[in-house]
Length: 353
Image (tube, rainbow, N blue to C red; front, side):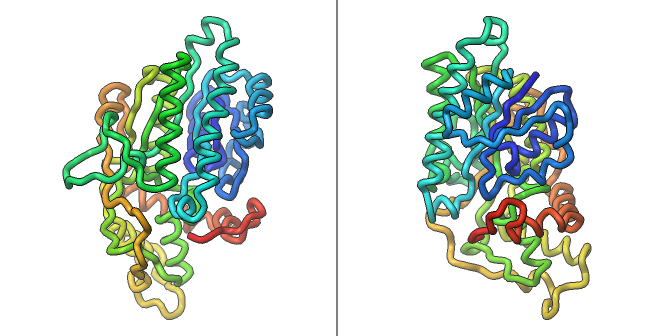
């Protein structure tokens, strides 16, 4: 099978590409615009593989999409290209509307035109897999509630509203045009190659540099943490074995308050890097509480029982094992993240975290 992966140079997308090339016989066409969060250095391990190809294309560019479909003739699309940082969506929502909504629409239309001209066998086997987020569901009220595949949408930020919009478009193209789509909604991902504006890598790198560890509000916002390589395995399961028209929630079964995540990172660094920056007695001393984000949801948690029951997927990493692997990866891969921090990897400097 040949899979067209949009956003394949991003955090989750690159994990999907590495998984497909490293653990299957399938081919990948990585389509990525290479915005600030797209980094081809995350794909050096597969870049020379004969089953891997790269196309620098914006999903809003219909002519370029038509060319890619015509040249590469994919058997499936895994759509991960998106603007995904909540704080950036608050400061500048226009890019999120353009990429996440208009881009998804443009990709759906290019895919539909391509799919319509396939022979009957390839048409029946084709899949369009849209990768989304649990943030479309909004905030959970009770301490025991979980997001299921039928939870009503109630997005809180421009980011989550734009992703909710793209989810609705994908389902509409399946209902109206018969395009064979699948949707997945995942919880917070973490792991290697994570862009340093996100919580976990930001805390690791700030601590190593003796900088403040900014925690929103009281730090009690709860998220379900999913190791990115577990997510990549789940996504491949869905695109190859999932039922057309279905939605699958993917979660890590690891609910943690943000402050607990930060404290865990500090404890691991005490063990792994006992020699601290000058003036720092304990990494935890760097924790600083800052004004909360506008519209900040308090708790997300995923019920991932459907994908477990129907496709046999469960996460392999606990939070404890995954966060240790993550911290160790950043300690061992300074060449990767230092080039992200100074902007030399793409020509764009790291923005406001």
